[in-house]
Length: 92
Image (cartoon, rainbow, N blue to C red; front, side):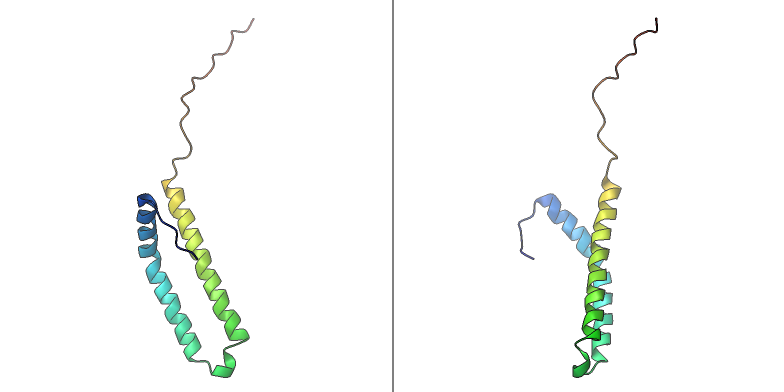
């Protein structure tokens, strides 16, 4: 992933997300390290490799879901219209 410059607002959001996700990442990395420590060299490829990849994908999905939840909380529900409502013509 290439580094792109962030605006001040983006930097602030990134800091909040990082702080929120850091403990979940550390816990998952610890679990993966323990999982891999139990495996012998000959067991690292194949099923073990796919298990690690799956856990990384799940972690990535949690990141995206976390961002979506956070942004949904900030959403205002839509812009308020500044256009006046048209009057109905009287029935004849």
